[in-house]
Length: 394
Image (cartoon, rainbow, N blue to C red; front, side, top):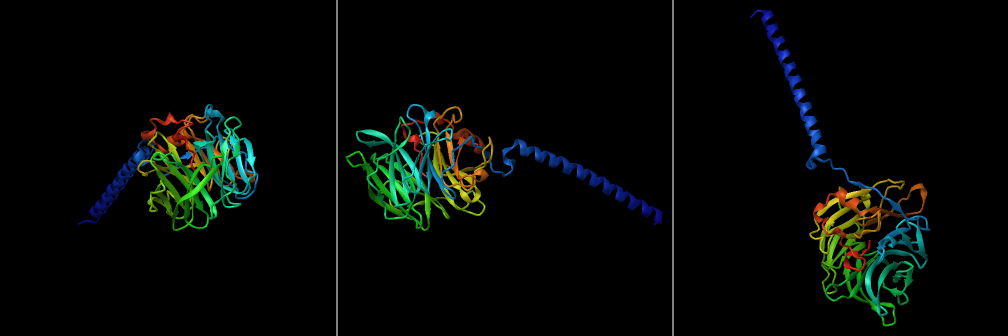
């Protein structure tokens, strides 16, 4: 074959190859554009970024430096929710009470208070009160207070110091739907011991206790929360998992693993605070502080299925939240800032080298970010005197 014919065939081959490459490049570009459009329109293609919410209020910093602020509980005012308060622990000195603007109303220097919880309608002196429990590391006891509804301040109502015999750490409260009795759970800070104490009026208008059950986990646990409706007790074993136990004294000592820690999440050790956000009597969410990732993992209250994760970023002139210990949540409307309730978290590192404090996030922002329309029906059903509003422990 003549050389010039061979050259023509080679030349045509290269031209055809260039045309093929050009067509392939155009097709790849079109596919890439369509794929990117799917990221914007189809939830299945949504990038795996953690949803972000922003605080609208922060509290006055606790008076002590270093790792001081720890746990928090929300008290809902019985007649005017805007007058509700936040009770926060300073584990280097006491308990602080804040209003919903974050201003401090009271500071009780009663000892190194680590965790706090409260429960409504506790019978005391021929009436019912909002009862607050706190673990006091100074003498390893449980301190008890009532919230005065007029002043919104704490008044001590415990019988001396309730010595637990352990190094106290976390606490949460429970009212049995079976017997109507009240209980407080206390975790130990050096072993996996969890105690359950029945609490009652001693006949003189003071709170007394009796030990009714002890649980044992393999390692340290702090955060806990109890569900009055379902009769469940959730405990955060910091390095291992969230466990669910029956909350009645006779429910035994065997727990069920709800979610375990891992290097990739959604729970990265330590697991710290736990809280329940109710959407009805029977539905809602279990929220856990994943301290290792400075985020919050959300689980379905009914079947404990994983729902999603969110973080609290900076906004509204308030810094972001990192390495949270205690948390709390309520669903009751608390004024224009919190029309669907409130989520509050301890901030491990406050900005401008200030002492630690607590950050407040509107409940509706969290619901919107984790995309949970299936349980929003009935979310306005919160009652300041009912079981839906138990700001449980962290």
